[in-house]
Image 1 (tube, rainbow over the protein chains, first blue to last red):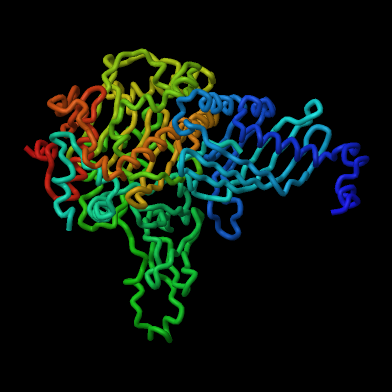
Image 2 (image 1 turned 180 degrees about the vertical axis):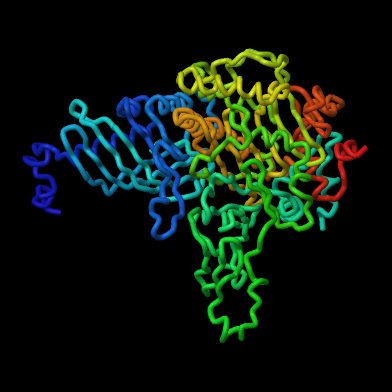
Length: 185
Length: 449
């Protein structure tokens, strides 16, 4: 490698000086959020949620061609894996934090990956972001769970950062292939 | 065969001992599929899942895949979801509406009542000799009971009513609305399905009468789940009225119920949903309407139970049904239906749904810890060394249980024990052993005398 090449990779006068785009800020925010979950900093994670958050993961069904409306259970009406507001998410976190929630004692190790991020709508009040996620969970010795799916987040600008106003999580499995859903997405 | 006489060798309900092999051994599993599951009436779903003609949903009858349909004559059919030609499932959607099911392999077509209606090449290929009436989908016997749908493929099985016996009172009571109206529940759309790494019997026997695993649910008690604004996870936790806690079992069928019997009739309503006045008002009215409707029997609070072998229900506002579907000695598919009162205001339905989704299933704050337990119990079932000792079901072994106690109207065939006890699990395994070996065990013999 020549010194010329390394200068091309990191031109000192542009990388630091250029203001990040909205997309970069959103990416950073979601990566930071994922890290809080993976580092089990659940109280800090809660702080990123809007007081009015709707956190929803529908059931998934095998549906007939021509009846795509059958694929996901409906929000606010049907059964769901999660249909939560901030108060119940807080409850779930309090349950995790007591040392007596045996399904998560000892706590899992997890890695959240967020990718294919795309801003699909943005106003001063709201930014709608679509992405794909891959969540790997390992617990005790041999318990392994792998969750893959699609997510739509609605973020609200908050100070210099964001709050999560709405999160819809679409898992790519119809039957839950694992015994527990103790993970946040 | 090693387990030829497995009933007597593996289960001894007189001494309260159960061999761990029954949770782990493949040969025992194969035999229990044939002797227990294929000879019992099994729950497949609820009529509110198929309100209109042509509606259908997929279900399981033990390990057999079925499709449950409402046909043009408004009859409910439970059909083996397997083409009679080459064995393909003819329906591959979790639910929908269809007059016909066509096999995607060779195009044999079946009506939603199971009749074979179309065979390609019928004239030239089969010389018009194929008797379509013999090649319809295999149909199960079907029983409908206050909205619930049951089936069996066994022609020799007793009628559903005989199979249920005195348990009928409890199953009917479970399907009532909170105000005591018959057939008062409707399913919330969407069955929660998950897979747990344990034998199906751990979940089933737990529902029969395990009343002392509170340590498992300490975290929910601490956080609080009931909408009473109090700690706890049940709405009845708010009720200070005195009651006897009963393990009501029916040895003839192996069924069991957990129930509170309140000392005094006509007890006052205790606010159980104080977080929402509209919901609270509904349950207050329902409480008094139920007292009027049920009379003396309103003293009973149905907490949940099991129709042998694998139908489990949770009652008393936790209205859900669980089907434990065996998939192997150490693998079980759990299907869960949640219910709300049909005629209740939307606010009540919403409150119930929210409570239930937080309570039940793999994302439920209560059952997460149950599933953890049963997955862990499988470790002990699989351990060859641990099998030197049988599983211990000796809690309150002895002469505690009494027939039709403390009220005769609980059922002549009810053998009842009070408080924390493993009496109901002993009855469960007694019935299991009888079906496996053909030999009546302790409680069955006593019941016959």
